[in-house]
Length: 357
Figure 1 (cartoon, rainbow, N blue to C red):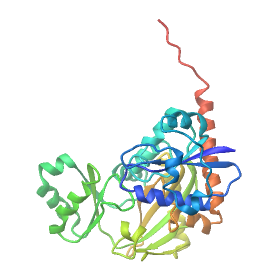
Figure 2 (figure 1 turned 45 degrees about the vertical axis):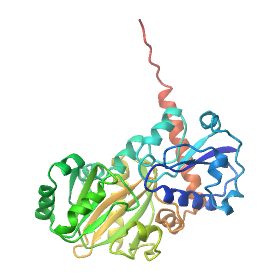
Figure 3 (figure 1 turned 90 degrees about the vertical axis):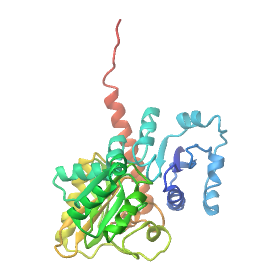
């Protein structure tokens, strides 16, 4: 039986969400092909061996695992030589941004999800918007500020936002997920502290025009060429779909499939397929859209390349509503990882570099 390294935890602010996703995946994984090996990364970036990682798994999941005995000293030798494929469930920075994907590539190991380029581009909301806009996909108007610019002249930046968009606006760290560091700002007095808060999580902050919208999500699956699910709609329990609403309060409501016209479904699915290709995405992505409540105009909001796998996460739920079970989804993701790895190996084996002299 092949060993599947389930990597969770990580150094980001979404550490706890990652652990919840890992537990949910373990509950739904039913395979005779793979033996799951838990591999937790601590908040300070230390890789824990399987025995220590097992202590972070819920009790009902621990009984499903038979972890190999590996000392901390032997761990990286074990990863390099014993793990057949990795499944990273690391949300946010140092997991969803291409960093760990680069490590797996250097190890010459297959892994589930997007590669380095797709991960890093999709993680940065500013870069994502530039690429999508150039590709003809509509995005919400926004302004970007870097920390060094902000510290030099905060008040000019605040005035620029007020003049360009008015209020409300949304303030977001450019590289973060799970709505961490995001604020809805209704007046100019609240803008400065909201941007300061966003800079706690990233050195680049995005300020977007506030629109009255419906929140629509869709799941994508494939290697560059995507198949997409039926869309789902989120009805936030708060003013917007924030971190507490996503993972704690339970006030959000969901409807799958979304109650929108066939024409809007067609538009959203076509934009999702196009965005997946434009950003060089592989494996999986949850793609989030807005529909303007007045004009019905569609905007692509953002893309998550390692979406949540928690019990309330939309990514697997939308696939289930589209006819793909949780177990089938996981098997497909692993198959896509192995297929990509095999293809890349075939390409790299076609040439060698000779150094003379």
